[in-house]
Amino acid sequence: MPLPIDFIERLKAANPIAEVMSSYVTLKRTGRDYVCLCPFHNEKTPSCHIHPDKEYFHCFGCGAGGDVITFTMKYNNLDYWEAVKLLAERGGVPLPEDNGYDSKRTDTRKRFYEMNKTAARFFYHQLKTPQGKECLDYLINKRKLSIETIKKYGMGFAPNSWSALKSYMLSDGFTEEELEQGSLISRSQKNTRNTFDFFVNRAMFPFIDLAGHIVGFGGRALTPDDKRKYLNSKDTLVYSKNRFLFSMNFAKNAAVKDKTILLCEGNLDVISLNQAGFENAVASCGTALTPEQAKIISNYADNVVICYDADGAGQKATTRAIKILGETGLKTTVIKMNGAKDPDEYINKFGADHFRHLLKKSDGAIEFELEKCKDGIDMDTDIGRIDYLKKAYKVLADISSPTEREIYAKKVAAEQNVSITTVNAELNAILKNRRYQYSKKEWTRTITFADKRDTINPEANEHRRESAAEAGIIYYLYNNHDACGDVLKRLPPDKFVTSFNRRVYESLTSKITDLQDCSVSSFNGEFSSEEVGKITEILEKYSELGIDAKVAEDYINVLLNYKPKEKQEDISDDDFFKKFEEMRKKN
View 1 (cartoon, rainbow, N blue to C red):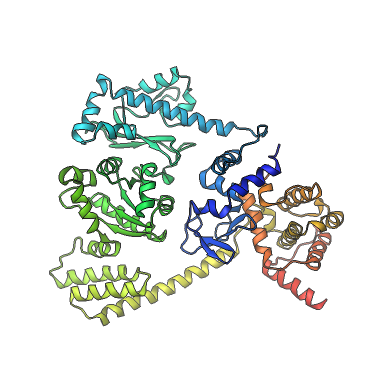
View 2: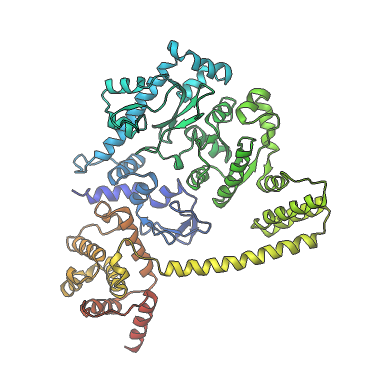
């Protein structure tokens, strides 16, 4: 049973799509509308358009689209009812008592949250037992963490037993299937009937999301002979490692205030910094920084200070993070920790004031990259300097701002005692070659995009002319409800050639006939979020064509004259629209 129309209208009124999306991504106004970098794929140029008056968004890059409910579903990985509940809570709109929706998935998520909360209590309690004394000593004496910090982060101890947690959770009513799905137990590969605790003899750190739910765990080995120093939960219904940042629940408020995030490698680095007063520290939980994590950071901060470990792996990860953060539009600097391998060790050896001084002296991303070019090179020899310059030219060529590139080019020229003319000549050669390679790549991409097959409406790949006509009729009726009766009388749904467009046509004409809501929101629940994106694609594409009754008539005739047995001319959408324009001019 669909939700009442008046409820959906109140829900959308309390959650304007631009306002909701602006809490996740940065919007730029363009007239009455907005554009932004799409949160659903990686891009440098904004291709996602938001129309507040029409109450929907659409990305021309990846095809994502829909209303505020669809956006909330896709961004937060929720089903329709979960997204509605989240928006209702956000906007203070009471939910209908008899909603008729199956809450199985919602109940499953709640069950996972409760399961993780129960496991966290178990781990925390184990710290107070004789078996947990070694772990508690490790946290307090070796890691210099206070009891207050341990409580704040809900840290705990996973006993040196293969069944302690499993037995406890089973006695509390959870099933083996739930525990395995929640990454709390694992199944033996040799004997698949046997299961055992996923975390054994480890210091435990709950993973808490922005809403305060415990979604997973990280475990730190307590013995040096353990092959895996760090062990994190596998991806589950409520946890995705690519979209999670440790301590972001604490860091978000400080980040909004200071517009800066301290990005670390490990959980203990973050906890030590937080205890020392740096609440804007986060970590990516044992994974290299992902574009999804960078987008989350960009929702709260403009600047990122990379505080990765000083070893080779940490420096390599720094280079990768600089690239990802830069593509997200974040300003990046890199901290140098002489005398310590990571922030945790630095804080414990030198204190918070020294670390604060380091932050002020942190190098920009370009300085870091240029300095890194010297690694393994003997700068006292001409051959070494030449090797360095070859690497440095590539770094300089990566700088998009001409002014910034010129400033750093002059620095490199002066430092290496070469003329700026020589440096610029080398740079121009690299940039010219890159422009050529880019042109080839764009041409290939254009050809590929033009030949991109429609996966939502696969029949459109073989019936482009008919599919284009169907989409035009859908757009026309979406904006001209009064014409529905006449069009439907002449063009029953079975005249539609493609199944997806037929479904949309049937749904739309039914809503119009019954005087129901026909906004993009009305298709939620009936269509998947990907299908709703296809509907918004139709609305966006055809809004530029100025479809009137005469054009709609042409579209109708295309479908009425369609003969399945005859081989249809393979014609592109653009050529199809051009032919229609020619027909209109003749008439």
